[in-house]
Image (cartoon, rainbow, N blue to C red):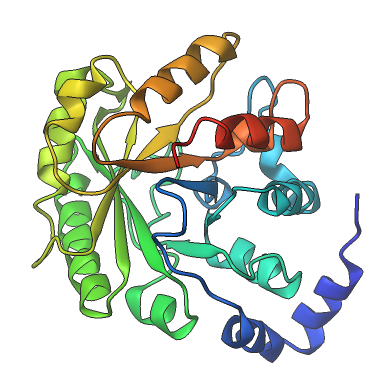
Length: 286
């Protein structure tokens, strides 16, 4: 495991180099040469969601997370990263984001387990900084809970972010859930309701992409939208073969543009990050 001594020195003494690294990053088209995209997600820690599998603090070590991200991003077929500013900036300084799509995570104020969890404030990237840092878009979590007053402010903020990102020609990636304190409604009906609310956010949907979980009856779920959609690859648990089979089947549906996967690939049960990433990439259609 690297000690990241140079990164620590730059952050302490030469913080302007972060902007320099962003300005010199080699970019690539968001559609890519391949029909479907593989995006690695690493925005969980900013809302206190540090667990992976049986390890409640798996993502608590930043240097270990960076080691795993560098491996994942180096694998053939990996198109990009979804992360908060702190993670993006570390990877910019490491030179790991050249030729990658970079999506900045925007609302991380709904700390996991907090009484204010559904008042999901925009505490990370804003649209102006995403544009200035030459990122390719912004992602927002949009949990819709009918008994949580904070949902109203979250919906309004997400709508504003969609509008501002679109005005700058940037992707607005919305991750909607019909939700409650007890958890997300992952029935097809729950996902369909969330999708319909999410795709109506903002003054235009021209740049909106959806990020949704793989659930039962995905054919019906995907019929609910014409927007480009990325599949959320959740924790495959103790039956990864079944989860991967569901991912592979859903990737064949019209409108599905690829996968966004985080902890399932960064912290696989066997700790083989490269192997887990390669398996996921092999599911994508050309």
